[in-house]
Length: 249
Image 1: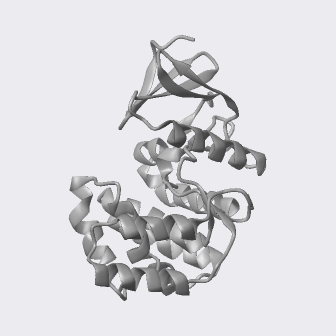
Image 2: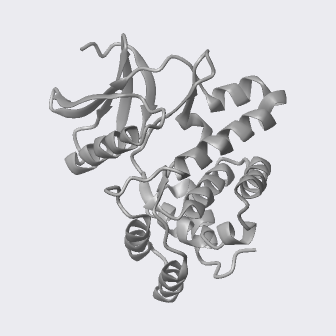
């Protein structure tokens, strides 16, 4: 297996291409449980029948964990948006349709979103009163069992030349309330400085899914608290401010 063609560099990992596969190679200090959980999530997503690159194997290379996946030839939806700004609205509709398709799927063994959110709120740096408010809000939200990607953004969608779309990076996948997944995507657009696109996305999703915008917004403080645990200094102030809002407006 050759590691001489790097196609992406991420925090704690590098992604290589070797002919028809990609190798996601993690740093030595990356927890084995996190690697194995990501591979398991990917396998479970693949088993739903969604268009997901095939999981090839999980192994160690020079003492580092690696996940090997089928290579999909194409461009990310983010690349297409950047290259064709006039078609951004068309691509956004495709993006929303894909997310709605994911939410129709079920994966009963996937981690429950509610359990993950509860744990993340407890781990956050928010004060006890705010954590209590967020736990209370979380417990009051409707309980669903829809497949949620957890990191659904245009960079995680590969579009082939034939127009087929494949969804990648299932490390944060859960089962739960789809509106929490939507709130996270909205938040990621905002954190990347795409506030206008975030609003367009949210309005389009809510219209297509016949979901009240206010309902998605109720998830924003919960999702922001969860995201704040990642500890990205550039995001902390905004996330903690969002998480402290009891009623988002």
